[in-house]
Image (cartoon, rainbow, N blue to C red; front, side):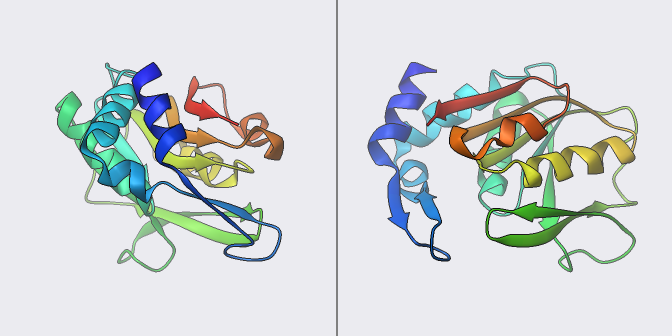
Length: 174
């Protein structure tokens, strides 16, 4: 974890008042664009649930993480999409963000999720609504969220308190 944390701390770009006033945005693009940093992050996240049989990445940067971790673990990957990006039928959950509200969706058919052991991934844990909504989606489909992991956790926003009883790993907490 130390190698991944060092890369995240060193390469993350911070933007104040983006996407709206009062929000401080963590841009992880430089971390993912750096080969060493990206591999360190993927290895670290994959170690959070080596027994998972499915990896789920939350829209949109979670797609990058999910695909990388699934390749390392030898599992499949499911993209947790923003509302309106998947054809029906879908399972959907609304949630609140630090700067508004949104909804997430996963397929309601075509992918058998019942009984699957899911590692849930996202880039940043802020207020916790996104990750909690994604976990609820998988539980409603009959899957078990065996662990969740993020690259960066913003402690001051209290998102950890909104999570379920699954283990939650953050590469960097700030």
